[in-house]
View 1 (cartoon, rainbow, N blue to C red):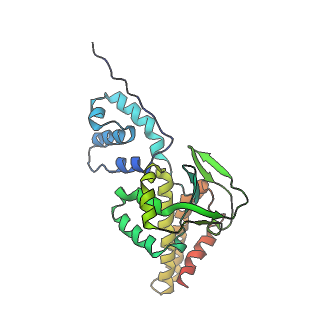
View 2 (tube, rainbow, N blue to C red):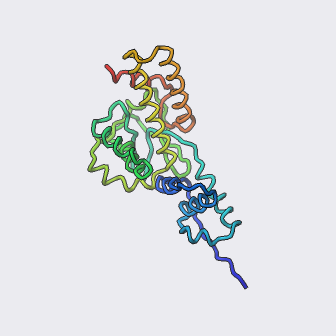
View 3 (tube, helix red, strand yellow):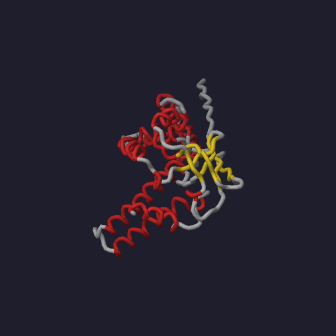
Length: 247
């Protein structure tokens, strides 16, 4: 008489950076191979274990993880993580060291996402709010105070690569969708600045500049949206901060 092995799973509230990295590392073309790889990455079971399960079990487990694996990107400038208030590092205030380390780490982003997250989110050293209002979603606490220009309302620790290396391992458990939202915001905000520089240097026309600007602002809006938390009530202040960089 055959017996079916009982499979015990704990479905988390969200996908971590480490889980996302593992799940995204599959390079093959086989959809079954991809399924086995994904279930193994999310469940913690080895690929050999997953291969031994029947198809119905793998399908049910895959469905159980489907919701956490499909979170939309969200950008939050302030987030409480492991009991500590962290703030997003504003591109306008980036040090040369941050740029250099980001450039190097992003050459192998798949394996360095937790290190990049540790650059983007650092402890808040000071804020100017009388009190902070939090929203809790998927056990993640994000600040939802609404202000016009959020980056004027808090300061974070100065960048130190040695300190970052001490912190980066903990970011393997950081929410992947929050990190991806921050990365998307960073890339779009940086592109806004570069687009403006190209126009000022007469490399593109005003019409081309505005067309690209509208597309990038739509991208920023999609990233922030309802999940923007403490971001801004208008994208314009952020845009004009970025254009000030050339002065």
